[in-house]
Image: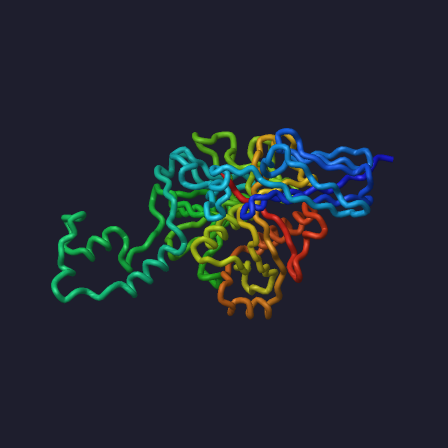
Length: 420
């Protein structure tokens, strides 16, 4: 009978510059159980009951570091290994630096958008000449705040001083309005221009094809659902504030002259237990959780909060709500239960990028109480996206040792983090 497998999990602890390694044995530790590091400090090697297991660490350890002997009779073993970090490594792990998947720099005039389900073309090549990244979602709020709290106009004539940078404008205030800093400035969809934020593409209705916009009626925030004309998949919604269609990135495929064969070739390999599958080997598809978590990381940096309530946009909103507590926004880990192929692991010298999340499902009454708490941001998402995130969090628990799957009343899971 072959010896049972062991679960080995390693996590990079950036703040204390150490690598934590946990091993869960099927049988108690005995005199044959030994652990060591490879000569290059990149691999953890465990020998138990005659079976050798190797795990690629999420960071390089100090050379010639000797591990302590495992405790006899124990099933759960743990080690702390010094991380041989360099300055470039530390800046790479900055949790406030978040790459945005499918930003404007990935697009060009030959970009074609298609429905992810049926491949129906909804944006023809050559239709969009210019792609631009939208500013932060907090931009309008900050401008309103500035307008309400700006200093009073000076009575000594300072408000009539000419703006040297804008000679055609008569006053300094006119200059600000011209630069879109005025309270009446507004971003809206433009013909031939694609506007990109973290989770959506904003396009003019006239630039799109093979879509169906539902009639005005009772909907979330007045948004009208936009569906694929071919398969009736919901692709996004018509935003009356922006006068255009917002297509969910997770419902769309894109190809262009910059990247004709791959939807996201710059994306790091995903841990297969969590991500959605691809239709072929050359066109990996990013799951909705990738885009949602990129948005949440952005909000963490701007709002200085770590808890988020995922609320469905469907009416009535009585379906699943999930409370997330982001515990590690720039985690690096390795797990013996990850399905990433060995060839991909060799190309991941820093481990797999992920986000550690404490989470729990909340009821309607609890959700109402949570909304009143300061320090919790509410994120509105389609119900199927919330269900996908819940499934991803649940599935990710198998990557973790049993002792790390719960924290008090919270479940613990991992979600993929996008990196270029």
